[in-house]
Image (cartoon, rainbow over all chains, first blue to last red):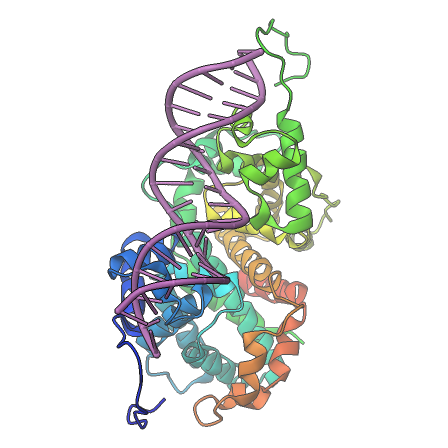
Length: 218
Length: 218
DNA sequence: ACCTGAACACCGTTCAAGT
DNA sequence: ACCTGAACACCGTTCAAGT
């Protein structure tokens, strides 16, 4: 909708809350307390309104999440991409990862349903373009992108959600595994926890892309 | 707890429901209607009891999910693994994937918190063992396993949740993307949907493992 | 020891009514 | 056109009481 669209005369009560205000409040909740605290009722309370008033500005909670996604996607940095297609692919994938890693809840929303933001398509576009530049067919490039996306989404969901506050079940279990049935894991013992806490996304990405370009998926 | 543990004399009311019965009912709900329908109240109704009776047999809903996870992990097939370490790695990873792919809700639970089943550690054990057999250090092998796990979890969460029933937002959006800003995606058009519906796990796994063994993660 | 019922503090959403 | 209030059909969990 262009901002200069002809203002056809509105009748009735003037709006007290706006879609923009709703999204801004939703962002505040999600960033300070996590997506699980974002509820229609809580949101209404925060903007001094009622749950049902929200339904005049958004269809339902799912649409609110899509709008929130779009709001984020516009703010994610899009780095200058190098000319070399392989480096272009890697740079775009890393940027996609970094842009999402700060907000793990986005990936939850992204995977939890058929929700995605059109402005986020910049990343697959350039990853696929880079792969084609490396000699892959468009079909192979799509499969390559998907493999990278699975890896990226999995990394963010699993690694991004690792707790740092309280002791984990893993930390209790790993030091005393049975060396008979699980010799490799048992010998790693408590090193498991620190090893798996390391950020290996970048290295993993390079290794994966090496493999995908050497033996493309048909 | 060994089944022949000395039966210390119990006093009071005999139990009407058992943990086993609870888990069996939970399985039935999850398999027929999905994990989102598994609630304490619904579960109680299914076994002809009350929500609060459940809390005498499990600590809370999270523990119920862990118990359910363990129940599944015991039933997942563990194939005979080949001698060749690389093939062993691939076979174990594929089995891990296939065992989980039938039950995408498991991955949700697995990633949603610090929940995992000890009996599921058979898979990482053999993936790491295969990687070490290919010449990687234990540390490199752990990172390789984690990369494979990210890929696998991402694939199951995203691909396993793809709807087949109703038309998706993607299907509406992709046919009319702007060729100026997104030339690669626009030229793919409606082929995107069918391409991304393909099951490429096996091929992706082989390509990834090729890359990870050629350039290990330190 | 085990189970029940009522209660608390929540959800998303519909519907009818008010301004 | 926009907002409100009451209601519906749910959640997980605590607490006090019953058998």
